[in-house]
Image: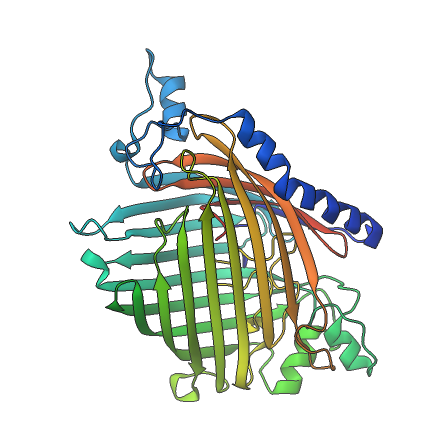
Length: 443
């Protein structure tokens, strides 16, 4: 299972462009009109919230709901500062490719140090198993030392995976030979790749000046026992690409050095109300580190948040752009950037992981986040995204775009860390649509 944050996804052909056009028009209205109506009907008193933080304010989260149900007496909601920064929840999901999933997920947050300007450190771990025998474990962290002198970001993944595959490129029609057509897969016929996946990534950032960090690290991506069980022919996207670029069909490694520069002044790493996050860097895969091929990638990640209200700072417009561009060499097929291939597997709602992919990839998304209830227990979002990529058959980056969008509900899971339970329903082209479930905002 590649995307640990997807609860349910179904790609169903036959919706047609007219239906999609109507959906996009509807979403455009939702993006700006419906949130405004919900907000105007649930406004809270002017002095009930601080302009830039909810810390110390009375809020209602799932922990308070449980206390209300199971404890006698009228239990009042606690202050955000009184709450534990640890959230434990079952990890339950269903996907036609993986079956039913059950597991456990833990998300935590804590400020490490006495300096009042220190950013909150966050960490998460999850272990799950599915009815089809898929096993997935991950551990991730984003930690800031006192005064933000150092920032450590890393993850560890071990999995027996099922990876959906829809071919190379952005779905543009091409003229080519039989192998080119199989690789491009213009009809987006879905396949499934089985295998084992192991990843270790760690980066250390040093603060140069306030909010500006320089970082370096390593990443090891290892895949074993890769199988395309959906077809007995060699004319599948994975087989054609692997043979064309000289990769073993059964296994490969993509191991490299990471060099990044980062700027961040977000007020919270889980759910920002204001600020900027920007990261740009190079990944240099090296054969002397065990990588199957040498390659140089340039990646960018930019996020901006505008709070629209002083009395309700969680009423936010958020923008995200993520890109990855191959500078030299080649990448294994399953390591190509694409839909849902960002660091946290959250991009491209409306499509499954890897639905569009290529050596050069560009993605942008805008989201409107708005409060629903006075006690902050429920809020909502509406969002719209676009993506573009190139392929081997003549389609260049930005030649064609694929849109997606939808709306969702947020349930305040832990007010101390601003952790939300996120439930989204999203649409894409080719009849793609699905339900997405996860902890913490998508970006």
